[in-house]
Length: 273
Length: 338
Image (cartoon, rainbow over the protein chains, first blue to last red):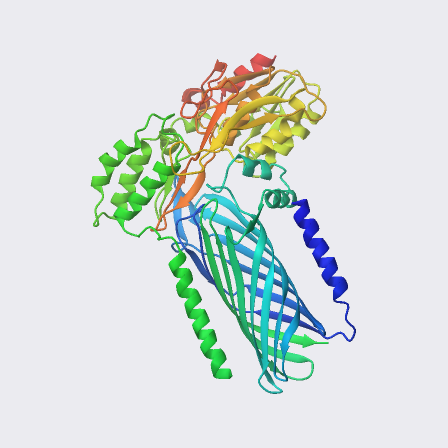
């Protein structure tokens, strides 16, 4: 784990030194909109847990001159349930069966260069560091199980943008991590190492323990990518209004199958400075 | 160009969604037969205590599977599955369905047998005024009336165990302690293990456990050993730990830890005998069940799953004692520490 963190920090520093451009051109973008998740983690359920949620927000910072750099933070919360919430009783006392709760955080850092550039279009390719952290509270009536998924990945990305005219732009991008530090719960969602990891009774220490129990994987163990399309309308020199579609895919095959895909549609407001 | 993007976007989205949907593992269907099959198979592949509980799961299938058909009603299905799970008599196995009382496989828990033989309001009458208690009686502690004995009760095993330190500090001059684990509902035994450090002067091996990690009968993780460790100023005084048939799960694992201490006497009734870790599962019709994917062996190398931890001194309250405001088991513990 220490080597991986060291590798990531080193890479980040090299990239940062390399990318000290003059004439900054920055933008900050806030996006929100509905997302639909379909997730099947066999360690916790044989069912496809799906939910439509409007609690999906994103914040992007982009710096672009000679190099393209972007830091992206996204959060989504979903409450899937096989049935609708319902009442049941425990020796006559009323209780409610609530949905599961999935909280998903994605943090990405992208850096790249334009390899094809014309008057109206630009193709940027580069590297991406990504951190996907998911806290999954599976609720089964009176009982709940905590699940997690974290993948700290290193990969490539491509982004093609086209300027239709002065007011309208569209872009499409693909992020493809090919190496990741993957942490997932054990086969049954719980075992003694899992219990040992939570025995610190500290949320942060537990998170670190879960992450450190992970392993380095490549595409043979974890297949994941993000694909996005964005349309931007320029309101004025400083502000853009946008609409986007984001598709995120995760497939891991050990200790049990996890397949997840999320479709999100968002509206964004971008401030350029 | 614009049209080209639309075509690419549509094609990409459609192909991604179709491709991904095909990747999902087929879900169990939502009909009575499929629900039964899903639950039975899940126990067959993941339940760890058939041997300890002397249950032939294949034989149960032969008995109960023919009772389910496509026209079986929800009520009938709940009854059939409950009867089958009832054979396990496992305090950790339950079935939850809309609008119904939860079914507990363990007869004691399901029928609340002798539940009324323990009463916190009655225990409180034994304590000097000013005793402390947590929200919803998560803990209760104080000094026994007219005796140099301190008492603490834990309703479950969790953050309430942080109170053990306050308890030991507040009553450091007593002749002995009563730790009441009767009706302890369980929780997370690591809270007990992290807070018990003052009661031991050395590292003590408590139990080992292993968890299912595959579908085959012998697919388990390696054994994992759990110890308690000395931590803080050692308290070496006689301790009576009270138990009853409702002491379950992490409550029992905590009793296992207390049992390693040479100055501890277990008193009361045998614990429930359901101390392996429990997890929840869901069914296609929205029902839930709980299952036990773990084996536990006490420090003596024996499994007490389905048996329970027997007390050193047996004591069981009677309803007539309770009705006359006497907790005889608590009284015996006080007498033991006088």
